[in-house]
Length: 155
Image 1: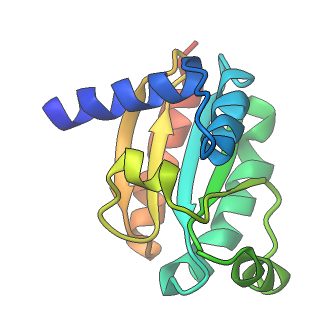
Image 2: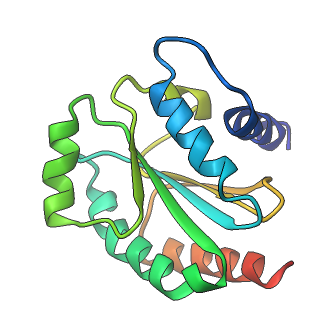
């Protein structure tokens, strides 16, 4: 519960805090995008080109965006590769039909205290992080989709 409160606090600070540091570009990109999505259910996915499960999650993320986008779901992803070229190569093979924010210095990733790849955070329509996940597989994707569908039903 304490960890969830810390994550909510971090997310809210990303949404509402305007940083003036020189390294704030990725954080500002996520902040601006999140603040523009008020009232949406948001699935924030952290990924890297070297992550095996990420290769399986991208087709599912595209499916979630296509199926539930009209109901208010927005998928956002944050790439943590040190070189953007690695991410771009990955995206050639596994295209993303959702926004990708690049975090080559890991500033955003550090603020979320990631435990593995991929890591995801589901944000409800009020802007509260209601679920956190590490990893992706066939069994987990059903759990994640159920969580998304339940949140989309809430107004």
